[in-house]
Length: 534
Image (cartoon, rainbow, N blue to C red; front, side):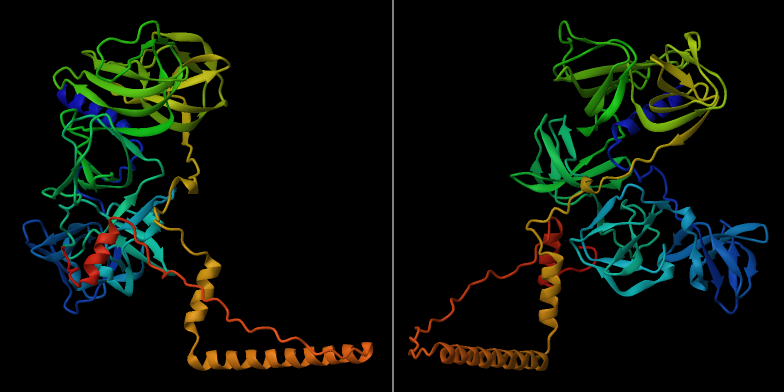
């Protein structure tokens, strides 16, 4: 029972981290497969896990690398050869042209961004065996939209050059000993969190043992610019306060004893399944009097977090800040499980916008996970409905969806439906570059570049040409004046105008702006102390 409860708990906690794109998992990362050819003239040895030789794979044999390992500083790859599985030295091979199958990578549907904390090397493929792209280094302080990614590598483009960068954030991954994690994820605009514990602090770097540079206050809301996953079960957020800037690390999968924050997500993610009381604060024991939210009310949830978990009984208490009748309240959901693992909760916490197509007449139930509450209304075969809320039945392995069909509200199972997830188009305005000063326009930059690219000879020719043009204009002007004088028979001495010098306009020197925390890294470079690993 404890294992099942743990599984259920993890699913709940996954909801609590919805605004964070959790590309981090709890196990070893999975790299994408790629094709190589044996380049060692003597072939390469296929070894089993006891380091015993299975076979010798001949020169010029094509293989698919299934996974990579680092053993005593040597990089190995899993392969299949003549129905035998083992691993080979990757130094005995080289990647084939067209070795990368992009269909095995996740496409960046939501235009997620990276920010370079340090100079970042680009590679020819999603492994160090592909080799570095010469002179393709992305400087610190750049924002990138990646195209494809697996759990370790991401395809990006910078200054017209396309290449792969190392994007696995966990420090304990040691397959590529010489590769440094130099990027972080860019948060969307208005990404916020609320501190719910007293001992929350800021660290200089997003790693254990880092220097503490500041403290965070309980029940205060902070905006974060960047986030990453330095360790399993841990999310780090880059926060700037008036006192200090640094990384707040939240062990957000270890239960309420370690969870120090409530994450912010402003969207409709809740529908009540029972009448609910409301609370002024998440720690209040008594609800607000004379206010009850009716059943089947859709609510806008913002901050939410795990308050309590009883690992023996499986009872879970979550707190969610909502807006109801124009006022903010906390709703406390005390979720529990019966002996037969029946899920009991006051609202749906799973949000997934999908289109359901019905293959058969489908009954509607008043309660989720309860087939004894069938209503008279059925959804006919061929109907299509957009749903947003769901519950998962761990006992049967089926999903339940909240529907509103012809005014009848209730729940259906997924036995007779086809589900299509709706990918919502990303809003380009969801992100910002966090520049400290407004950058020059493209036209100004191009003009400046052209100006800087002129040689002295070119400048001399331009000046000479300009002088000729001015002389011609002067001659034509004088002739016109003389012609006018003759016609009007007017002889008049022109008055001499005083010659005045053009005012000298002082300009401010243009300085390059680099955002925190990359600014600190550039300062290190100027002192020539930016060595690897610092």
